[in-house]
Length: 234
Image (cartoon, rainbow, N blue to C red; front, top):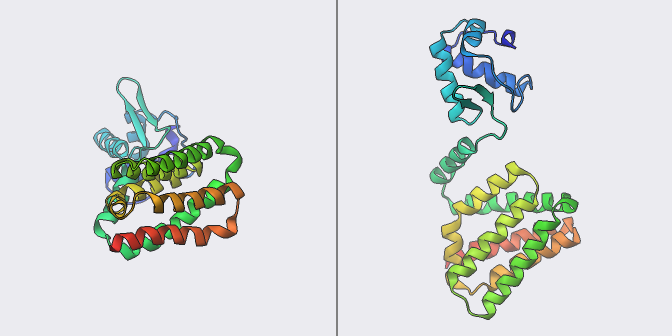
């Protein structure tokens, strides 16, 4: 496998190693679980020092692309780490807190999530059942005049189930991050309700999924996000 590593342009020695491995991953010449050649083989193949190879592996490990196993070699990660994606998303939400942007983004992304849930209807029965149970729990919480924190957590749990039901790990992770980034604003909306608005919005989402009513998604999501947005202004 060492003949895969051939430098092709002027870069720093560390960049040569990092970019070579990234390209091999994109070209599917390295696959999850594959063991990489040792430091000597890579350094000779790319004409760089072993120290540069070692430093590059630390960088790739920080990105979650490789798994360095002491005494056993370095492997392509079988399940990419989420740290890099989370960092990029965190940077966005810290530097772009404008609620209007979030309002538009949440509408667009939540529509896609619900569409994916319907697309994978035959695969997500477990999560749809859990969503139904979540709605029953919320109804009971409202009926017992439960404290706001319990109702708020039920709200967050519903969105987590929605993410799981889309059966797309990448989309789900981004959706989780969006929802968790909005926790403070969602919590604020619960100071103006006893869960009745969340129950109405979530029930409509659940019913659309059950009916596989693609044509109703846009209007349903707009109404749901409007509730969040309008309560946020109070």
